[in-house]
Every structure is written in structure tokens, then in C-alpha cells.
Length: 57
Image 1 (cartoon, rainbow, N blue to C red):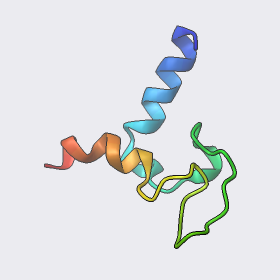
Image 2 (cartoon, rainbow, N blue to C red):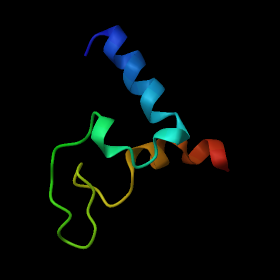
Image 3 (cartoon, rainbow, N blue to C red):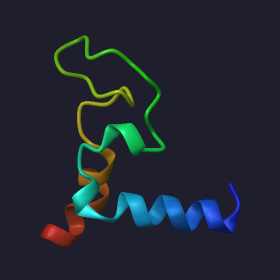
């Protein structure tokens, strides 16, 4: 990942407006929602929410 890609990644991940914007997320791997509402990245918690958590507290 070059510097430009890294900056774009950070800009996306640290913007709470991108929460659950799976279509544009770099972590989207196209996983199915099974089991029980798994996100396309394979996780159960949005990566953006995790990145922004410290800013909310």
C-alpha cells in the first residue's frame, strides 16, 4: 500500500459517516451475511465504527 492509498484508507475509516458503507469499504471481501448478520468483510462489527470508537468516548 503506497502513501496515497494509506491516506485514502485512513480518511475512509476515520469518518463516522462511512459507518456500514460496505460497498465502498476497502475491507469488503464479499462474504455472505451468514451466520447471523455478518458484514461483507467477514466481521460482525463495522471497521469504521471500531476505528472511530475512541473519538466518540
